[in-house]
Image 1: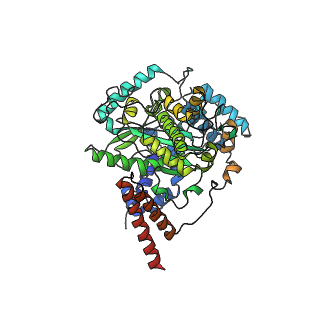
Image 2: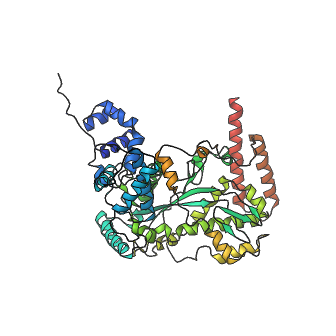
Image 3: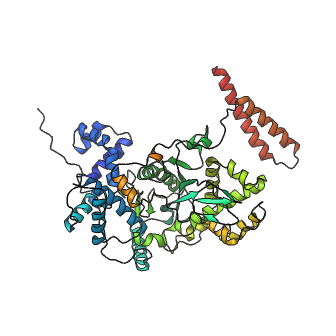
Length: 524
């Protein structure tokens, strides 16, 4: 008769490790043996996966997660949810959060939530709140955190020690940052209104997505842009496989980055692409990803590869606004490239802006923003790291290049754009920066925090149908596509100035369509 198995109580970190191993194909039986627990316990962990990940993602300390063994709820669960949402937003903005400020907000939310009884936001309550959510500390100073130059110096010195200790090269140090993009916003002769733009008197509907850029400190490895839109498959995608898009596309009902999407991106996109890049450079497959304190960024313990060699590190809230590399002109350059290309495309097609706007789809925008990111020069990115890594200079592959697209270049394009010849420099600048302060995460008002804490959702967004774009659905068969390629080849043959590669591309496309046609015919 076998002895009774010793009772094992897993930490939150242990449960996260088991979830990751299950996702990678590990069996419940094997994991039960490894961790000395029953298979039923493993299955329960699988069942509560999202709850565990959400709890860990919102925690502030990796070390506390390694000790904490339960997700004990508060007596006032709604109040806890509201306070955590509020706290995360304040931290992301770099606002000071002292004990008295927390107590005052807790009292406000308690009564705003309509909770029964008396509530005393004592020091004991605050301590328990911090413990429940693994919050390391709450600042007791009252000065504003944004723009702390002394803290910048302290962080940079500590970071230098960190990379020396970890033996990391600039090629292995990354930064990712999200921003909102109004992808269908065009300039006006008179003004640019945030969220809405006017073109020659015609109002444009706000079209917004979240775009996340990620690159290393040399600027030589730029990952595909991560884009979050509202619809799972917008109409303009039609038969396009999302895996073939020039960006990594995700959907969320408000087109916001969230904890789940960020974790998927880290595990399925960031880690594999970084490994591949470092292998190609003959470097150890080890890297760090610097992040700000956005509420959509999970805890460091969640953002870690299986072997622990690729991991996240957070910038302190009081320095992120000053030194986060991608915020030092890199994202602004990408957006400027995007908008200048839209104007140039309109000019080349000879359309008036109203027609161009009507035809512009999200699919078009994704290709254009991907190209705009590709056009951001490595030297632009490497220079943005100079506050954190002053030793990173223009090295091999980072020669001095001509500046990125300028305001004067945009103005020149506009001078040739019908209806916008007289747009002022001031309005061009407003247009280029219309979404410069747009965060990649949803900023909630007090009322919205209260509704979310009570489990209420925005009915309009919950019941919102898939994004509808005014594009007529049509099916094009193989024969029609083949005829178009034949016509295009005939046209190229007639043009004496056409170069050979153009013809070769179309011929390759023709061969592909013919093969598809044969396969279809043989299956009928």
